[in-house]
Length: 206
Image 1 (tube, rainbow, N blue to C red):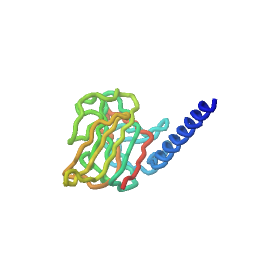
Image 2: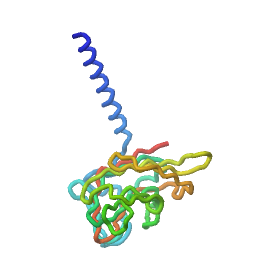
Image 3: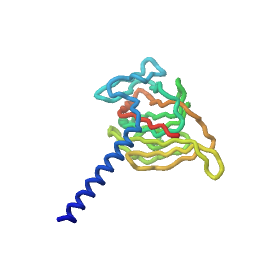
């Protein structure tokens, strides 16, 4: 009985430690979307492009534009969002972009399951491409990035780790350090695309 009691005690302590660790980790994340309004976000682009909050998610429709987060700029960070794209839709999760970006400004993590553009979700557009459909259209998934300037074999570079639904796809090393720092944004690509975003969070890194 004593052995069993000790085992139970150790198990409870381990569980408490695990919960404490998870809570401490979650505490490091800063929400960028309050789930109710577009406070902290600004549309850049066509007037007939629409961004609104419905059922706790940001939704983008209409013609081309960008929805830019007004905080920052950010340089080294972890960044994550829950995203959904429609069948035939196309969007992008931008980072280290400008305050008033066009489609070519900043790194773009592609959001695309079945669009005519074959470069799919999980890609860093123009740099590292995924052609396999990793996420079904119309289904929520979690996009997570870890971005930091670093040195590899004596060469400076920007390290970009890409994770989709907990599956780490790759780590891309940008030796050109193409974009130094900047803001986060989401792309409304075209009238046939409908993107939804929720639980947008950032964790700055040193």
